[in-house]
Length: 373
Image (cartoon, rainbow, N blue to C red; front, side, top):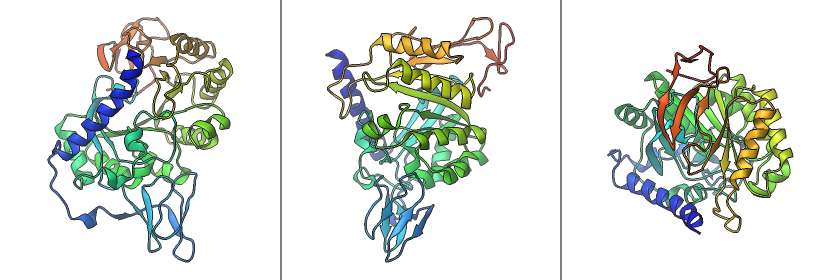
């Protein structure tokens, strides 16, 4: 019961903290006129009689006048599509990059993390459902210009800006402008995403991304349809496009008991990653806790996570991690694939030891895949 209570309380505390920071002036932004908050969306076209069709994500919603798309974040106003999330963050935090999780990107550095309300999926297990399933205007603070996000990231000493917590796709225009400005200031941008985005906007965004962790939530259309209201093919295409665009990719797979935890599911996922991304692509198997609409399930057995890691290694993946476990030795350390020496020691989100120097193992000189200072 203690685990169940913690799994419910933590996201509630996160949400309350996020709202507190935005409304109590964590970044002390000056208020801007309301009309600056409403921006015309990208990737849409008119469809007659003041209807519009959105082409940002695979849903390609046909949206009638004065109505919203599936994501709740894009609205048709008199025959034009507008984004409701531009300049309207609901969470602004400085996190360790390890929290994304990105283990092979600037370990031990800060990542200025941002999210808006909304999502274009309906995952039954969402840990941030209070904001991902909310209308953007229901959690509204002051207008925050993209340039101010970049400025604050610099002030906090953040090596990266992370688009995270909810689904970054639904604040695409805001994210793209921030990423462009960040590039000019020498700050890298990363995202944690479900990967449910169309190829054209993704390729445009990818030009300004250093890394992405993609939630590969399962490995069948049945799973995606039943648990997320999405589809597998679109996500796999996103991952391949990011690889083509030379964005560093890490994969997270949340293992849910009885849903996506079979040996076949795990094996197929690992083989696909190896074939399409390469054996050195980090894969994070994450433990599920009862959440949102899946409160009747039990947490993922530790044995299931260990088994997933064993399968991944058996199929040839080099860097495999286990997350959401309480023990510091649960499988989040990076080990050299050549000499088996400890490279990066992690306790929670804290890096306690780093033996990677200039992208190589300090002990044997083996090149370690990733993005290192």
